[in-house]
Image 1 (cartoon, rainbow, N blue to C red):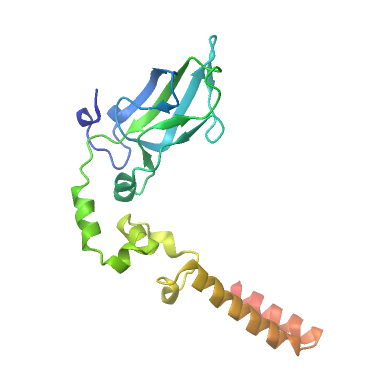
Image 2 (image 1 turned 180 degrees about the vertical axis):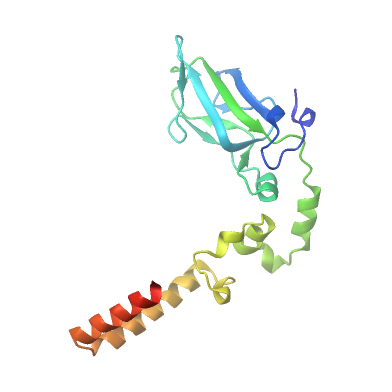
Length: 189
């Protein structure tokens, strides 16, 4: 049954989209699920060694295709279209996959949002993350003034602050330094 026969499931709640133990002969490196794009979460690949099914390890035995960006952006969940077997083809004759199918996905609304972005915004990771509704993207900065800065700019600002603190501490005696550290700990607590 192709992907269009499954309802679109952006929240992974439809049990009908859960595909279990779909078997494929392992004759090539590409393993394409029969029911279309799938979510990374909850997948399982197993290889048949002639006697039993053995769980395969991500990064060792297989990797994912490049991300299906429009689905990943629309759902906030990583989605892919196929697996790539990277192990020895002689180890297993078949693979069995369990996954959650995305279903019939329409990417026109997301493409319309993307075209509304200015060319400058399209080049900024933060803008793409906002499309995915990822609220916690700015957690590393936690400062609204830094949200549109690049990682390098944030690091440079941090280094400047550290250097300023070191210069201030250079002229102090040990007791004063300990006193300042205790005051900082009290602020953090």
